[in-house]
Length: 259
Ligand code: OOG
Ligand code: MG
Image 1 (cartoon, rainbow, N blue to C red):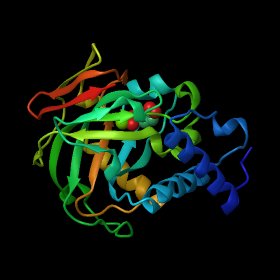
Image 2 (image 1 turned 180 degrees about the vertical axis):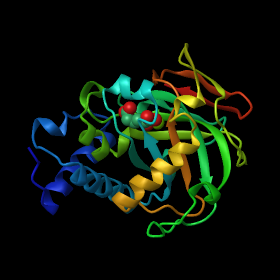
Image 3 (image 1 turned 45 degrees about the vertical axis):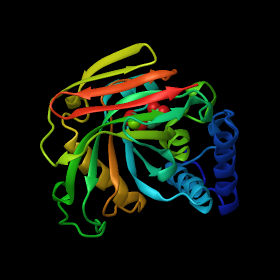
């Protein structure tokens, strides 16, 4: 059955609920427990949620893809690519320190980041997204679902800005083909190994998937934007201590997590 579309007021109420969960570091039940949310409305909730963050002075610095790897889809029981937005408040410097206390139940995952060097015209059918990218880097993403027990539906996670919480980008290098490179993530005394090819066979394919979703959802792509291509492995719980991701031939990215 098709969910009926939500009113502006209902969208804003759901966005406020997710925003408060994040601000108070308190989880909230799945939206699906209360209301059936269509995917179009889930992206509207996401926009309203990010809008509240922008109203508090944050700025947009990029976008992120989710569920571009089978490991992530299997871990979360979801099977379609999703897009969320990154703000400056989520950015952690490479080698920098951040505190666990701002998160509900954070996990960390190894990612590949791209950087856009020009605005992308979503209405230009001829745009070649790969030529709009000037740099690539190893990255780590901290995800922190605002939903209880990290359990959500596909529309829930879209509304919750795809669990976006923080990210760390390693040294940028000129755009190059990534393909299949070994990945290792170590954090909180655990580690996970994988390959960049787990991201849609080659993370560059995430750029094409991104353009497709951004066209449909009218999510702007602008010069300077960071693009997180999605995790190469399942996420691992984040705990205090050193976090480090190494991607063969692409470099390393680190952060110090304090409790
Ligand atoms: C949703 C975010 C997924 C990725 O890289 O696949 C994501 C989640 O797992 O909570 O960021
Ligand atoms: Mg991710």
